[in-house]
Length: 128
Image (cartoon, helix red, strand yellow):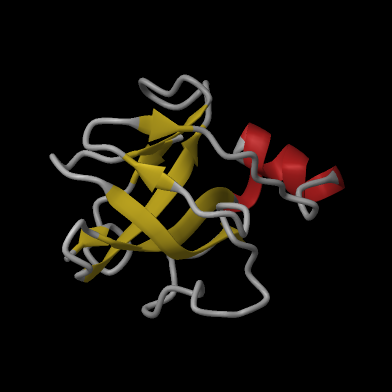
């Protein structure tokens, strides 16, 4: 789900996302500025009013077999992330960016309920 937390319209210009799997920490440079990463929104124009949200379908074709088991069960320290960015413009045409990164919190983790939650890292979670 994408939410416009601002008070004015946000017109999507460009977006990318990727699933990232690691049994180490995240890389210093977010691996999302790659044209092979799919777009979050369709090529059609998307504008969200201030406070409005919408849901986009995203897919992960690489999570299967042993990797899926290891992430689900916490084997070997494997973790799943979804990260990306959205470039948008405000009503006066100023272009802005927002970056995000969520880590899958297994139901067995302390307080985990089987969802993706924000990480605390300004290289991945930011807005200008």
